[in-house]
Image (cartoon, rainbow, N blue to C red; front, side, top):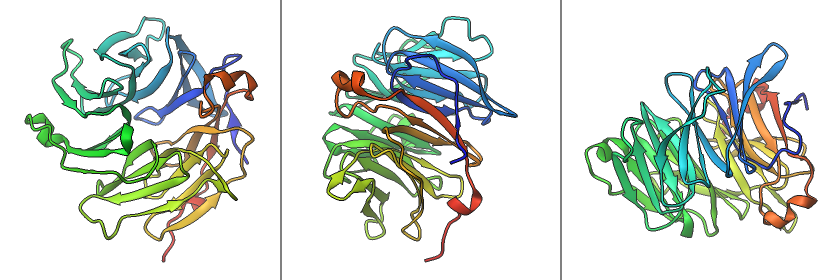
Length: 323
């Protein structure tokens, strides 16, 4: 309700990620058919300003913490830097892996890449070789960084937490690791206060993990309908510490982890929600009503059109509640 559908190219492929630029004035979408779409915030919503076509699926995006740059990476095994002030120019290759790059993030002036080649690497944009490489033993499915906390979710359901300060000193040992959920992970997200992280899985569950505080950690069920269990595709934090989940059931929910309550359940869409992201000040939520490939590539011909929406976030819907 109240959501605005963004203009997209015809026959858009499945949306793999959404990203707000650091200043909140822009939104970036990446797709399985190799597109990178850029929008700017305008009076009447968001206007498309540029797009770029890659030769392979784009799986993840990240924004520069300074400057008009966006990073994109995916199945071509490379990460590219795109200048939004010169979108007509070909993006520059800034990182390479031995397998598809599934997840990327930025911290300070560094790009962090996580790959199906079972490594995470740090890149400074000046050298063709990574400054740091962490061998994980399993494919990277998701990663996130906030402050000095880097969280990596891998195949075999493992989550490893690293202290960025120790990594920059050459110590690549994880500060914490666990198997938070019984089924395959879909996403990890660091808490704004860096006390822990969220992990979501294909089994309609979210784990709220406080690092070093097992007694406070808990998991809960969501995105279920009777006996039907749906994947929780993504989680995104609001600046106040509450968060949203989106799932293959077509649903978006707001949650307060501190009071362990659901704050808001929005009406379900008739297609899966592949991605959702709050903007930096928490006033807008972008989400993709899009096929999430849970049924494989062969199912794409049977799916509904892929669409991107932005809705205003009502403060009462995301306000923390007392226990």
